[in-house]
Length: 319
Image (cartoon, rainbow, N blue to C red; front, side, top):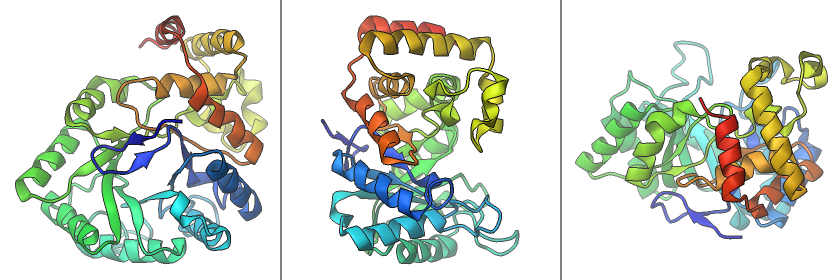
């Protein structure tokens, strides 16, 4: 399995990343440990999480995913086998608490807290989880530069940035002569193509920015599990699936089914393989709640789609 460099960071990434949003939420600690073991044992290495995971769950305060990963790292001794990616910027406290955004003080405090939960002395990729227009780019990028110089962060990335703002940040890094965002984490999948392809993709390819896209399986819709409104009760994520159940969504599923049948694969594997084959994509992020589920997804990295397969999927998902 060929590793891909993330931007010009020097980080070598296997072609699928595992999403940590489910750890400590829909995957309990035992299941999370098992998924992480299966992930590493199958040759993959980028674990993506965030400080805010899973603050949206009643009774959670954020940090649950990082804490589970940290306990797994301590128990397994596999820190050197993984690249740890986490994020800062989403609210970790009430409005006015100062526990959100990309101000220097909060970035430093948030990383300190993340390192403690992850039980490590550095993260490989530290990402701005969302833009903070209230904080000057110079302050944010300067704070990240300090953390890199201190050896607490190896590279930085951006998540949920628009093309104009990402370009502005890249220009600021060049002007200030500080490390730039080497990766972008955008929403991208077969159904949701336009936001990335229209403006972000040309910029990332021109600048050599690595792309680790989230919702690679459209909240699970592209697995083929949800084909009617009657299927929405199959999981806690069902409510978020309904917008995909339109004529275009059904056409995408039909194309996935056809390509999957030709390769003796699953729709999820084909959906990920389509992304892996796209120039500029470093590694789509996929979540799993069991080793068996991860092992199914991992096979996408070895699935070679033909030119006609990709054309069929492109046509069905045209926007």
